[in-house]
Length: 68
Image 1 (cartoon, rainbow, N blue to C red):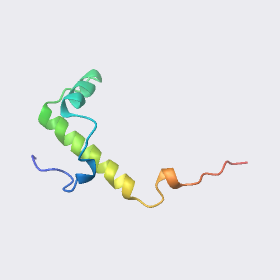
Image 2 (tube, helix red, strand yellow; image 1 turned 135 degrees about the vertical axis):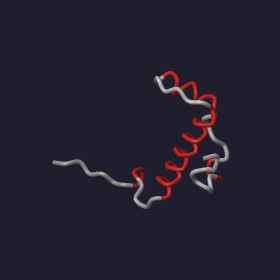
Image 3 (cartoon, rainbow, N blue to C red; image 1 turned 90 degrees about the vertical axis):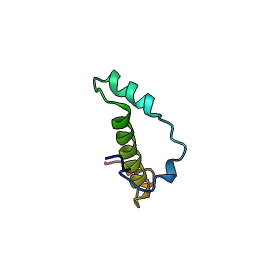
Image 4 (cartoon, rainbow, N blue to C red; image 1 turned 180 degrees about the vertical axis):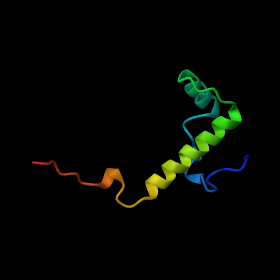
């Protein structure tokens, strides 16, 4: 389980959320994790973010027209 969930996470080489910050944030919300678990959670979330950014038609590029 020490293996990264997403093998190529170089896009996030300057991660803005540290493992310690993740542990504190999760703790504030009633979720108790150790540093190893927090690292796995962060790797997963960064992998999801990377996948989202690679999709065509990503939300920031979609034109949504108001319903009339």
